[in-house]
Image (tube, helix red, strand yellow):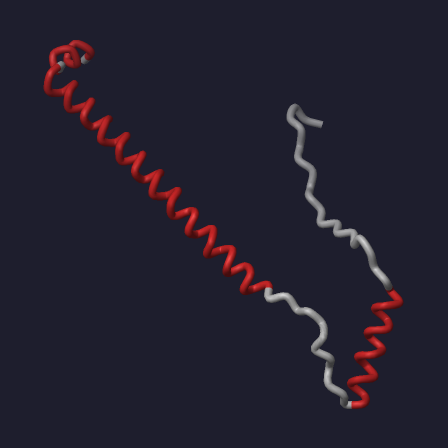
Length: 102
């Protein structure tokens, strides 16, 4: 035991909320029987379009970030201008005061 608290390792522990082994076995049997009989798979199951959803969300958030970057850049530019004006004022008008420090 040391002076500082050591971080514990994070573990991935996914516990499913509900699992029906009978339904899974039934679906597997149906799938195997359909394959043996040469029948097509039913297209009635909903398959979400995850990729399109992620792309849509990324594009939306990218637009929000652009506005934030513009504000950040403007603020940084204004601070630099103020600092440069202050430095110019000190060098131009208060040079003898600055020279006393050196």
